Image 1 (cartoon, helix red, strand yellow):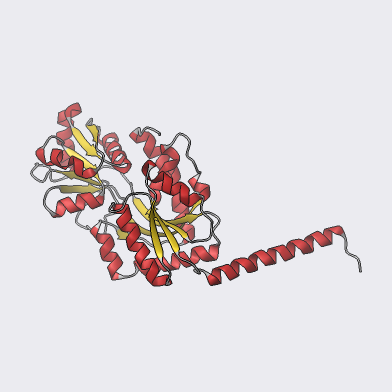
Image 2 (cartoon, one colour; image 1 turned 180 degrees about the vertical axis):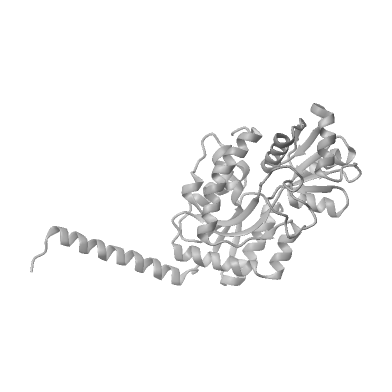
Length: 325
């Protein structure tokens, strides 16, 4: 019996496809068969590092494999992002970090070393949080409306503190919506601005929730509003900027990313692990300490959020006039 060249090629393709599918399935069944690398873009002791180490420890429990945190610092986490993007797509290199921050790298660098929309995939989401508008608790400002009225009177002599790109963006959105003309004062980190905030040298600040909540608990700052579209379950009494009359939907969500091209069965396993981790009371309490709410999404939903964030943060960076590196 003879076969034509066309029939031969069709049969060969079918065998190859079966081999690929079979190989992927076998790999997924064996996964995980080795330890994980958990990548962090900031130094030990930082908020991102605490977050990474918490989830690395929980990953060890649910998988029975070690999860070793590696701090790859520099370039505002871009070194870590690039490392993950270029890693082997096998599900053993995980990146628990702010998906919105990774998305923003496409607009913060003149020549991004990698296209994160094509080289990074989000396997799971972990939490949703927001930046916060804070003032000196001794000030007369009890609401955003109080602050806005006073800042309009001060005009260009008003000042506010920021220490991260989301704070700069929140500040720019606030000024654009209200007509406030305050001058941004940037700090290396949020604690560096505290003395000026409580002494009255600065009128207000746009800061990350870990810093803002810690200071509010000690009575050193007052939180007027959060940047997210909805109130956070962890601090339900604090209104959103939108509720306060300032249109804003600046949500900062965190997820677990890995290298694009990782087999889908592996992605599904990662998603299921983190869904289990997020369902525990311990994790809910851990997240609440930093003003974050648990957030569970499917891999498809998470990746769609990531691709949307890449587009949105291009607008945010433009509005805030953040210079490119």
